[in-house]
Image (cartoon, rainbow, N blue to C red; front, side, top):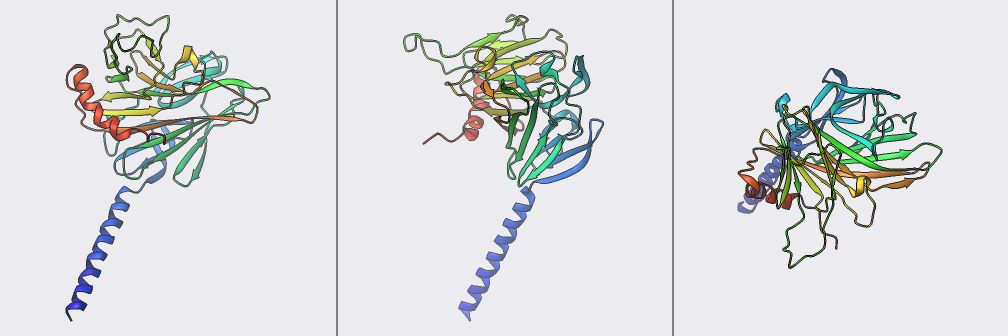
Length: 341
């Protein structure tokens, strides 16, 4: 009799554990909603897991228009929303729109600003949602974004793909640009400090544009970080590029920290005097940009570039570099890619 009771208890415990596990899986499952209205556009896809949410545009793009903590307000989107800002060129009307987009580098007018105003094809491939742009008539390039949301965390993987659908080889690099919401701070790592006695050679390049003003108070150049503050009252544009061997950049907005990771290959050549990371700001937004290496892409061939994203809420940057380091170190440790064996 006692043995039967023990078996019954074990069965009941096992059933309860299974129910709890099933409930946890259901709570963290990725939910995909179609035909969601966002920023005046009727056909968007909302992807959420109870922790964060994404809005993927399909009436234009490929674009990711929102990345925010699930259930948060409109201003808690780390990405900017700029529906009316744009410029007309020989290829038509291009809109920045905000959000996250894909270009091909190096920058050139009008090629870079080819309009992306047409609907994109949406392909579901397991957990991956692929946004595929029609081939750009002027360039022969087709842009794609492959988006994957982790079911149990804020982690998003975005694979960027450029395919040469033209008749001739094109030298280009994938260029992933996130237009960030107003009022935040971009954070970019310096190379680890070594004294003059220990290290005599340069460790990386920093690239300036003709309009870069290093005395602008939005910049802070520290021993551990370079920071750039977005100021809606400052109309003058600023830009800097980095050879970022650390492979990450962050944006802090309304106490939420956005972290993106990306690769660097020292054997490859990158655009803009060797930049795999760039940042730009004006009165409307701040851009966090990563770039892949320059490649001569033959007709029918494609190149890809990966970014990984995370969101962390209620992050206190404290005071100065010590505060930033204290806030970022556990996050960087948690999100560090596996070391090659």
